[in-house]
Length: 60
Image (cartoon, rainbow, N blue to C red; front, side, top):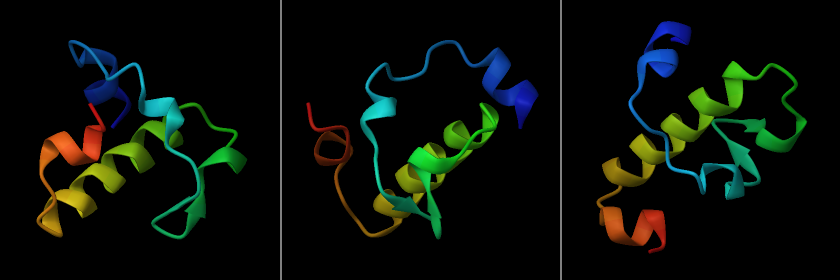
């Protein structure tokens, strides 16, 4: 996962605005810098799986 995120061309700059519990873990309480990125991706996949439109998820 570290390699995936290190090689990603660009991450959404607003990803840090995601707060609360993602996959049972409070994002604000995570100390490891890689884990929030993984949890943000989990949240995106969960919302897409529920049928939400990408525009609504990203709140453009």
